[in-house]
Length: 292
Ligand code: BMX
Ligand code: ZN
Image 1 (cartoon, helix red, strand yellow):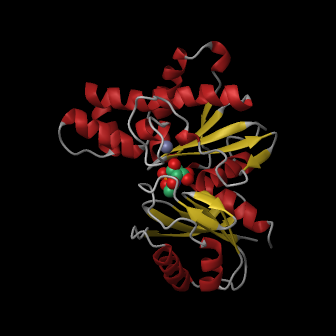
Image 2 (cartoon, rainbow, N blue to C red):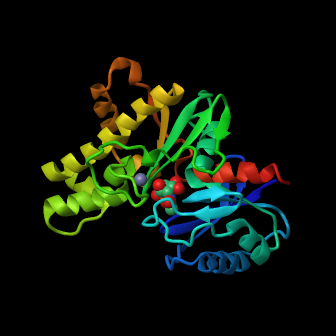
């Protein structure tokens, strides 16, 4: 038995039929970045019509942003522009005529990793995704933490450097403002004096470019400091790292090296997300299954 899961991100929307940790019949579309939730729903409905599929079975949605009572709000509108409190679940149920459950993408991924991935042996851990933004999900005592307003686990918005760059969320010097793929591209562009994107920064660092090295080390140091904070906050047994940047060549090792700045008591293991980019789909599908 499989359920349909959708991962709604800042750049792409992924679809798959998910059975346990297995994702089949994948498809992907670009995220309409118009700032209108209705355009997201229309794009999803078009793709769903193209895919066909079983009627009325529930759909699990993992989405960037804060989900409260089925309504979506961007914490950092730079990651996904959308009107505050957009009724995502109601609009999708209307458009697709199927039950929909939705939660934050990194919360979903934390749950996916807990059930089927690198968090299987850790009742208390944090999932951290370094991608367009820096997302997070907390599992404490075996339970996924969502929070009353949906904000639990938004680790990218813990402050790393109080005199650092302004973050799209309104705080200053958030981990996301230093460590995300967006921040890496911005900081590298400043240092190199020409526009570069995050994947290129990894290539430059591998070729020995000192500016690119600095920028990636800055990102890794912010993540390592965040891990120390999570040990202090919930006694996290470790972190599971995911996302395009998090899973990029050498990044986990870079965070490991940055961890030596932390006192012993605040150091914990860092594991790669073993569900990879599918963790969000897998976690959202598991939640949708409960509604079957
Ligand atoms: C942002 C925030 C989080 C999200 C994280 C990673 C928005 C729209 N998103 O911190 O909810 O989990 O980015 O998102 O405010 P991703 O799209 O980079 O995976
Ligand atoms: Zn922030």
